[in-house]
Image (cartoon, rainbow, N blue to C red; front, side):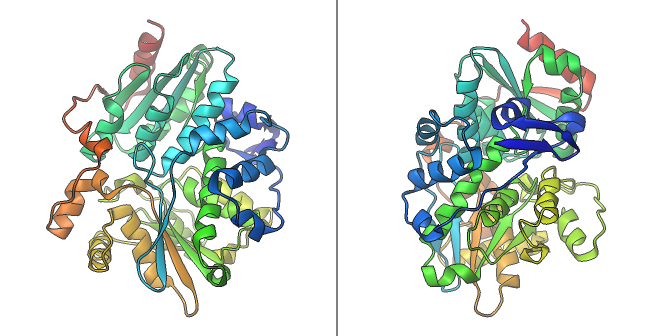
Length: 427
């Protein structure tokens, strides 16, 4: 597999190189120079999930990791991604059946399995920022893996308490830092660290954010899994609404479409942080200050993965008409949670944003699918306040609810973070 830096086409990498580097020169994103088209899509959709995922990833990776790929996928994808009908026109793809109850388990576990086989026992430091679910998925995927340390930055007081407990209570090779700032500040700290040779080379940095190409490729697989569960006569008119923050999830879906998956179009569903919906309507890229919302994992005003979607347009893999943007405010998010509950489906705010955008935009003759990216219990307080009734905790959350956080608190100051990481990881 050959990838090129979207900021510097001369900076190329294999999959293994891009996986280990994370970012390219000038903080550029790696992206495939070619996206393979799959033939006999109906036969592909008829395969079991794991077998199909091996087939898809093998097409993407080419001759890389041929011997290890089957074992990697079998270890990474050990849980289901069911499609559940909400009403006659709309269904939901549930991506929260993994160990940390979030869609990022797919990418996190695939990346961890790949990296564990590529380190050659050399020490690696994973540095990543999270607005919620990435932290838990990455922490659990890498917890206990020899020679890999993980440092996770998160915005202090801006993610749900149960989300935080899932990754700040592990200890061992998992180190967590509560940053006094928003998610964009955490992202900036990560980028600054990668631009600092002393830290990047001295600590052998890698990033497990959705900017890492391995995460994206893993996520392509569950879009095929979703279509395999949609009745054949509905596939060509399928509209998929993706709750969008850093836009890795949507990028993966559009890669799937580029490979031949018959999705009619996508909706980029955002909360009040509506940079992309405004851009799609006006053509002007004008990020505003990040606003805190109840769908906090999407509180991102400058999504890092957007250049990859632009690349898909520019290279002609996906037509711009296949993407629309919808912004959903706090009132409509709450209304959507209640509407879903009235139809017998309990949702959390991120999926509710996608449901609202989809139901508002769905046209005549179209069938809708929205993505549920986290278990509603991860946002227990919000969901209970909106619905006025208690929801039960799944065992994974009940196990950590009473544990103490091991996170360190730091101001939004790169030099202090640098000192902390060097002292922590070289001690």
